[in-house]
Image (cartoon, rainbow, N blue to C red; front, side, top):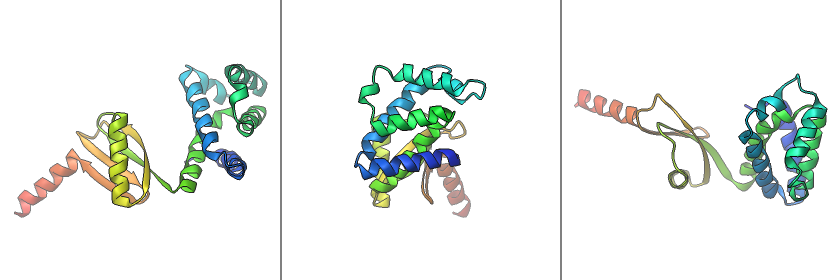
Amino acid sequence: MASPVAEKYAKALFAVAKQKATHAAVFAQMKTVVDALKSVEGASAFFSSPLVSANLKLEALKKALSSQIDQINPDLLQLLFVLGDNNRLGELGNLREVYQRLLNEDLGIKQGHVRTATELDKAALTDLESRVGSLLKAKVSLSQSIDATLLGGVLVQVGGWTFDDSLSSHLHRLSENLING
């Protein structure tokens, strides 16, 4: 669950970007910025730390974005600077999640989550999204995580819908069928 702060900023940016019909492009840029910052070791701790001043965080952000600053959507850039000024850059990851949820709702895409024993490659994830989308008669976007408790298979959750195709559920059904004849 995202923080109220992330909700507030994401909704404000989404409203402005939607009005200008740039909401999808803003998300793509936001995702790039967040992913770039996550790839830098210690960046998340730095931007979330209450011990680091807002000015220092803002200067670090400006330096990190300096080579691409002219290509970033002005509304997104303004939001990044407002987050920096208000010592809220640590909320950027949560803000991206809320923005993605808002964008998906606007585009009619249902968000879901898949848990697997091993990581799915891009093609397998896309195929699973397509299959689940066909069952639900909607476009589906799935995030994924590794679940060490699964022996194999997948466990998909989209809204209130759960699809359990895990090895343990198959074994459980087989056991029930053997017991019940």
